[in-house]
Image 1 (cartoon, helix red, strand yellow):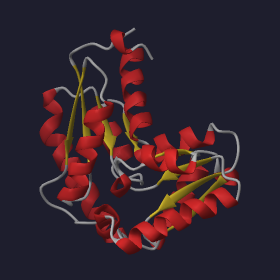
Image 2 (cartoon, helix red, strand yellow):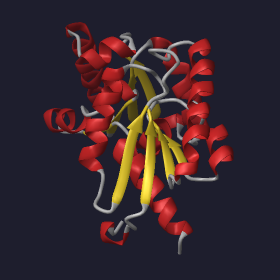
Image 3 (cartoon, helix red, strand yellow):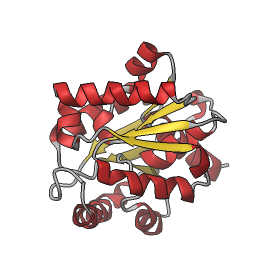
Length: 226
């Protein structure tokens, strides 16, 4: 992508579907660091909703609040949207509602890792997230090469980088390497900002999906204007 060709009017909204301010802050810092010249990005989260999305009820509630947020903000002319979570929360509905490019960290991260050509591992947080991510890998046609591992630590503690959360994260990465994974995806917005340092430490391609998601919506916007 030629970043010099990006139009200055392009604005993208990145939505953290949970209401954990620490997670939103980490996402905002990361997105600011990867936003190319000529692009405006805004990171936000709904005013109401679950603090962590860890159950089906949380997902239903988060979807409703995310869609309400998009309805309130879409008149501002955003060129695309990123759902900063490792799920399909509000993706289909948002695409219908906005008619703009919309992508989740899950789709962006998994498709990027799958391009490595070999086995790859998604490291997520709580165990209950595993079936959802496995189902998404089936949707994306890469389930035979996608391994999903959970640290067993919730979103809040993961974002806070508690001692146990860090221990479990590093154990999961080491296990993925031992199983000959060619890439690792950090499967939660709670891991925002960790990919580069972990990749350097372990000398393996690690992504959190943010750069890939931003690249996707920018490229989709450019394609639509040509």
